[in-house]
Structure formats: structure tokens, C-alpha cells
Amino acid sequence: MDKETIEKTKQTAELYFKGVEGEKPFELWRAFDKDLAKDLSLFITGRMYAREKIPHQTRQLVTVAALTVLSRPEELKLHIEAALNVGCAPGEIAETIFQTMIYGGVPAANGALKVLRMVLEERGDWPLDT
Image (cartoon, rainbow, N blue to C red; front, side, top):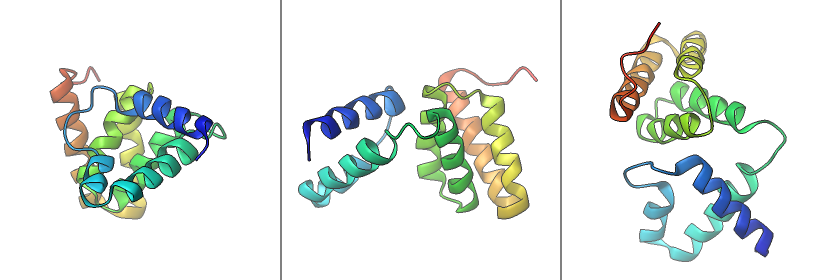
């Protein structure tokens, strides 16, 4: 990979995951295959997430919606934190989750709202002022 992609990977990872606690996917991948972990990170974070075709906030709300519908709470937690890190408001994230009820069902959305609440509690941002 070129130096530009490596630098974009570092910058995007810092933007999205600064202060995020717990094991990140890269760390899990690296435990099994160091070279593949690097390749995946450079592509996902340095190429895909670093694209400027849509704003980072939009990209993270799309990711939250997809992970909600797929019922992937561990990955959802990571991306709710990333959404907050790039400037998404808790209400925007909640609204994105509510929108998924139509496509993913109420149980998936309820699970996602619980993850959102947990992240906000951990950050000291709960309860919301609604």
C-alpha cells in the first residue's frame, strides 16, 4: 500500500475510534493473522471509510442502520461511538435506529436503542434532554 493510504488509515481510525474502549476489529484480526489484519484495515479504514463522497456523519448513520437491521450489537456499539466521535447527535442516531424498525423489525431496533443508551451512559450523556 502507498504512504497516502497508510496516512489516511491512521487519520480515519483516530477520527472514528479515539477514546473507544474495548477490543477493536483490527486487534481481533491481528491476533489471528497480522498481515491480513493490516490489509483489511488499510482497505476498510483507509480506503472505504476515508472516502469523501459522503460526510463521515452520514457514513456512520448508514453503518448504524445496517448493523441495527443485522442485529450486530457488538459492532453497533463501536459504530455508535464512532458516530458520536464524528459529530452525530444522539437524537440523530436514535432516529436512524427508529427508521430501521420498518425494515429490520422492532426487536432489532429495541436492541440497538439499548446499545445506544449504554454508550451514552458510559459517556455520561444519559438521560437525554428530550
